[in-house]
Length: 420
Image: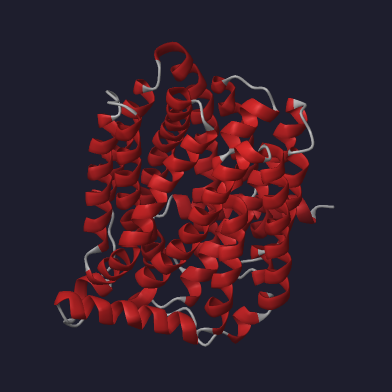
């Protein structure tokens, strides 16, 4: 009986230790500050677009505007992350996003919202994989799962607070305050990253690489070749694509489900985001309690199965408390899978190709997500939001079953180990 409390206490000690680590603390705090701004921004952006147009398809266009820069810039971003100082990339991306978010305080129309969303996504394709690429340099192997978990859990706590604040801000003084707050958080994040001490990486001390278009193309091909040769990644990529096909439409259409199926006012959409945030806050504890520092890769895929069932269930119910419970489980499983995925990929991908591999995973995810959005934009008005969630849930559950069966034991046979 005392085993579980002892494990829980041990996990909390690991969380505190890694969060207080001088090498990791500035990045962790920067992520927290950015999450607060991003939560306010996301809710305000979706509400603004839906209010301006009144169409579910317009929300899909917004998400598509965020995806296209990933597809266009991803290959370039991967090479840049592996060639250029990663600290400089993080700071530049934050400063650019601060200016973009601030411009939405005075929206010029729905076209302006789409343009800013696309530009923010372009900056994020450089920022997000870079964060994942530097974590192995700021933590030890036995800290990695705890570092990814504490980042997810504390960020979701901030997301819950942000979702609650967003409803009040939007209801009282409109969306502009949320966008202004997001701009400030990006600036604070940049100041924190200035303090970050990132050891020399491929971008700082690597041997001279070929310049020009030919050199970049050669680096892109090298990253693709690495993924094809790696037995785990070559199988992981298509499973992730299927999961993205399943969730791209349902994730973007949550605001439509909120209004058309659950009958909620726009400001109450924040409640659904908050429920997901509560689940995501708790989720990272699960692998830390039961999986150890090196989780079995099946921890990546069981959450897909459970969340798929949840997507079907939420399309069948209308009472808000039941919907919130389902979304809590949704967040629980999403965060469990994500922290295991981040820790696994950081361990198995060598530093010299980490930027290219991580951006390739982002490109694949977003390409499939774009297809899903296109289908959802047509189906949501043709067959209803409930049917969109039934189809998406069934596909996601299938991706979980396939991943479990194909990849459950593959990590042990991967030809690459964690190395500098």
